[in-house]
Image (cartoon, rainbow, N blue to C red; front, side):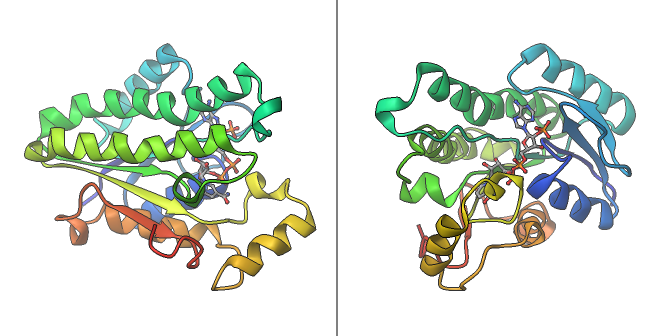
Amino acid sequence: MSRSVLVTGGNRGIGLAIARAFADAGDKVAITYRSGEPPAGFLAVKCDITDPEQVEQAYKEIEDQHGPVEVLIANAGVTKDQLLMRMSEDDFTSVIDTNLTGTFRVVKRANRGMLRAKKGRVVLISSVVGLLGSAGQANYAASKAALVGFARSLARELGSRNITFNVVAPGFVDTDMTKVLSDEQRQNIVAQVPLGRYAQPEEIAATVRFLASDDASYITGAVIPVDGGLGMGH
Ligand code: NDP
């Protein structure tokens, strides 16, 4: 069965690995991108999730081409790391606007079609940092922790409509986002990970695809760590 799948931020990193995993399984996959050339093989729609009008336009385009979104992976996210005393109002609110409010925008719009279809799968990409905290990342950690309360509230609100909401909390993954860390920071992180390495984006994608599959039909409101043991079940 080929479903209409949307992966926000599916043009690179974890999002691209997720998009490929669904496409390889035969689904119709749309991705969002903001600039540059998106990767081939997907319906690529330009969309900045901080702009409600762009979100609306993106959904219209996807619905025209693939039909209503049946599986939504809210993956797009940013960091703006800074110690609290140096963190500006904008450092804080822009990260919340993308990671939390941006997720609210895309989830709300997807639910229109899911309610009509009386089924749907939503997976939010949080982070181990949202559960453990991280010095210098109060804005990012707060935005990622908030996704848990958001997903669990919706799991309760919309469970009777056969829509599931789950959260995946990756540990450190080899992408552009973690390339900015110094070798020393990287070594310190790896030393705390029981599996002793970063994850590859495909390892996150496999869990996301499971949560959207028939095998996960009775899982909702769950937070699944994919972190090499870093959070130890948090
Ligand atoms: P990247 O920095 O490689 O990619 C981020 C993606 O988000 C890009 O596709 C980017 O689009 C998109 N994006 C950012 N802001 C917006 C916006 N305003 N509107 C639309 N798209 C946007 O990050 P990763 O692949 O590493 O991260 C993906 C998700 O996984 C994020 O939510 C991140 O917080 C989370 N995560 C990552 C971890 C890691 O170790 N890498 C660990 C735990 C969680 P564009 O290309 O246009 O900039």
